[in-house]
Image (cartoon, rainbow, N blue to C red; front, top):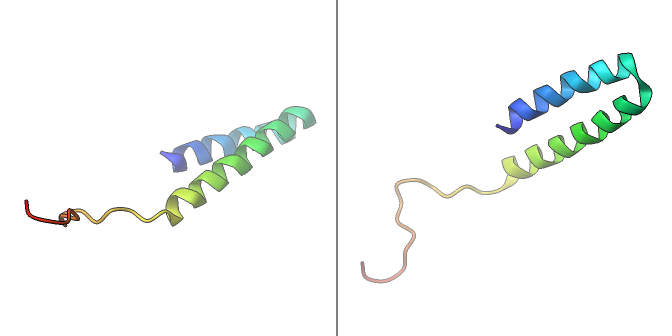
Length: 58
């Protein structure tokens, strides 16, 4: 999902640079934020599926 947002913002950013500098700057900020959130989600450890992590008797 974040990859889709990243691609959409990248396209909007490129259109913004061509059409208007102020809108391009705003989209540039949004693109940076999307990149930060994407990196953060990739670095966050994910729970391993199929392994019960509960402690104690079931």
